[in-house]
Image (cartoon, rainbow, N blue to C red; front, side, top):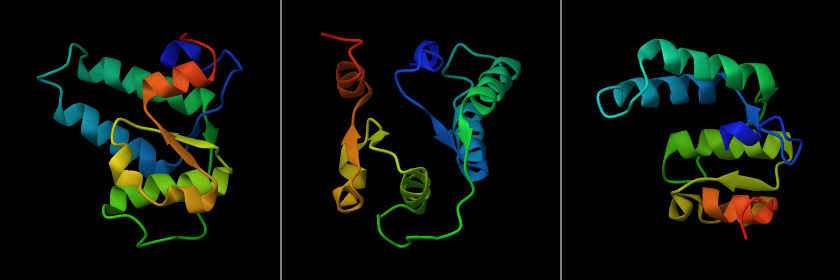
Length: 116
């Protein structure tokens, strides 16, 4: 999906806490992935360059079981997103109350016409 960020088919929204979470998660997995620390930093820099930056002024916590998931929900709400894209759909039960659908990456790619 990184290759589609500048396609105009969707917009990505980020916040400072989410970028820090991405960085932490990626660097914890450094032994298991093929990217170096410098390459991870390059990917994060790219995301910061192309995504819409959002500040969170209102917290919906606690709504979900995991505070890190609440952080994503809060970003989606402030950004007026239609979707949260994740492999962990069950972690976002109830977000439809905010008008947000939770899709896997494959489901999202189908939704935007990138997969049949």
